[in-house]
Image 1 (spheres, rainbow, N blue to C red):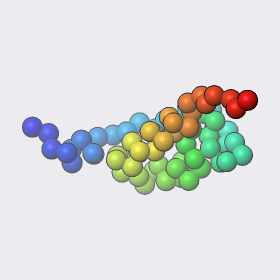
Image 2 (image 1 turned 90 degrees about the horizontal axis):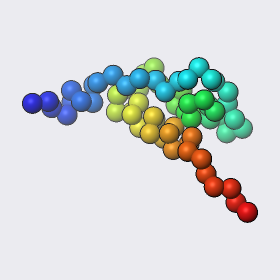
Image 3 (image 1 turned 180 degrees about the horizontal axis):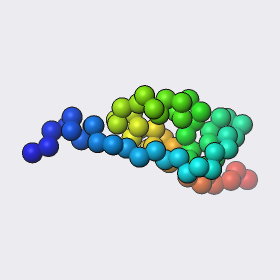
Image 4 (image 1 turned 180 degrees about the vertical axis):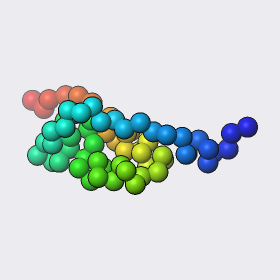
Length: 67
């Protein structure tokens, strides 16, 4: 039986796509992470990395244009 701590320590792959280009809000257009999240990645634990990935995916989702 796995305990929750072993799940939290599983490796989380970086969402980096090597298409780094920051927009006006310091968000990478390639992976969706903010500049602060990119800098934090190396020291972040697996739980935080999953949260960063989830937030990045939300930023990359297309949004409807306002008319």
